[in-house]
Length: 280
Picture 1 (spheres, rainbow, N blue to C red):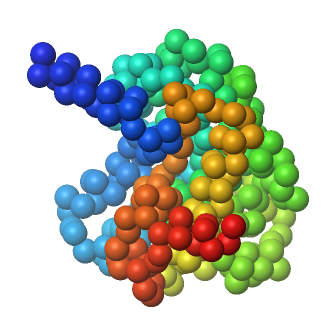
Picture 2 (cartoon, one colour; picture 1 turned 45 degrees about the vertical axis):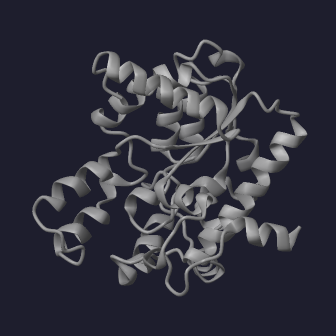
């Protein structure tokens, strides 16, 4: 998003025009997180994802529910000019910290900030594979971010039986059931339980591969698409207004249907719209 003179301005204008005249739904990936930053640093040392250096950083508890790096915040602020030019109706965001931060820093200077609706959707969390994907206490984040975005709507999380452990509720059934069966109180944990310890224990044998299956990710993608479609209809969102989805690489990549064999344990997965048509 650097301004490089007239050429830069022309490029930005074309980009704004493409967003304005394009799809009603805009996908927004979070800025660089501290976990992304660590990965980049490690990649300069080795490209072998099986190297111990990646395992150590991927399961570093200090990176749990990773926040944006300084570079990530700067990336969000650089995107404000484009965001401010768009007529935004709603931003639907992942509940993970880096996505909530991105949502705030991209839209905080929008001329209609106070009128934009902001909705937190648990199905938009990142594929749960490493420490940065395990949430901290959502109630703490709710307090932190409603102070920044007063209209931030957490009602989709409030519908869950166990809000603090929302990341477990939409995991693969075998993982979910195993975690619930072995869940115990843990006073010094942000969620007050051993959820983090259990998830990391179960994820370790899969590293550097995917712990949460891509079929489960596909199921979450289908639910997200259905939610967005129903939301637009229920709120009579004009076609001239945009709905932004602020989330993460894997869920957004799957939302587009453009994934390859390496993102699946088995076969190339079908586009979620195909399954939506079959299920509707």
